[in-house]
Image (tube, rainbow, N blue to C red; front, side):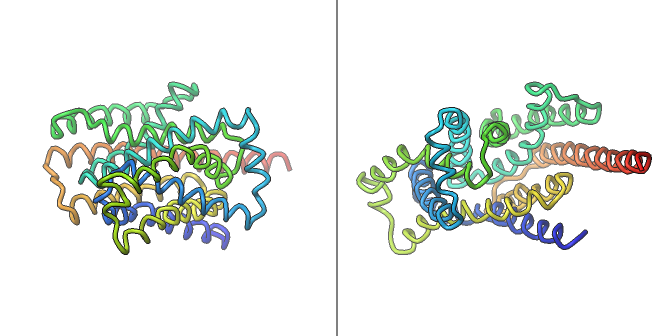
Length: 305
């Protein structure tokens, strides 16, 4: 692995570690409602991203994109899915359902695979078909242990997977795209912030001292992992970047079970284990396919010379 790749891997590991550890950050704000927190997060992230874009000379690109109807129509669904994902995640954390967030992010790559097959016409291999079968069994088991279908986990993983699909259609880089998305959400978020400052039981009523620092930092913890990921993505093969991304649900799983003491029954553990097996099967097949493609490319290059 060359220096460029090693730099990318370090950035990816740091980014995913931060994303996973954000559970601890949001727990510190558990006294506030998820709606208030998302409002503050959007406004703080928008402010930081506009400053960042000004520093890197990207204001013109973002303002042009926001004025362009063809770009806005792709930004809107991406922004809607982003706020659904953020709201689901933060709401789960502050309501002591960390294990469900872990399940959601374990499911996300498998839901993405289903989107590829059902919406994009991609081929479903026998291994991936078996992985989907394992997920169906896992969700059935988890539905029994939770007493209901794990809607929160599926909503979290599904919104992230569909957000990835929407992002493919946005003709902007990752930083510019996120800036456009949070700017699109800013009018509603600003209204939420104003109401949170004035209503009884809102941020203005119950926030004290360090709470204000944490609320401002919601923008920082949103943007910094993204910057690290943007640095890593072009430097790390996706066959490696994908498995590194499992750090996020693994960290959440450990925090929910061992740190926050959420209930982990044997049946629930088996359900999680089935999802892990499905992920490993897909990862192994993906790496083997990538290796085979590289070998074929080398052979073709040798024949051409």
